[in-house]
Length: 124
Image 1 (cartoon, rainbow, N blue to C red):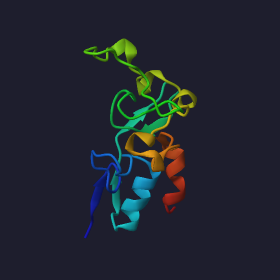
Image 2: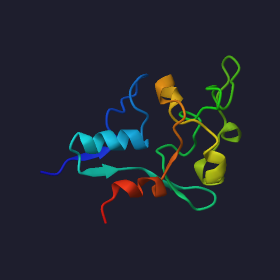
Image 3: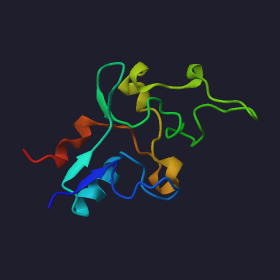
Image 4: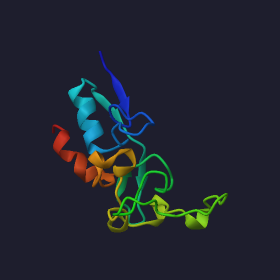
């Protein structure tokens, strides 16, 4: 029987669950018996394929100190000019951010997942 997992194992939208589309979430899915893993694939500005669901990184990514990428004033909404879009940003720039700490400090330091990072889990 085939089982399909999208975004990785235990990636509920709540603090404390594994960061979605992270290498640890996909490793956990494999360990829990999933044999088909899906990711939302996008290309960076420099044409590197990354697993990332949203068009911009603002909801998930954090600065090195854990702060949000953009600080909004009371009632202010995020505009396109404030967003950091995957397709408009190089992999090197995207790797400067933390993609795990939004789910808790135990996940701090996780980087955006690009396909080269997945190779060790693919049996050739």
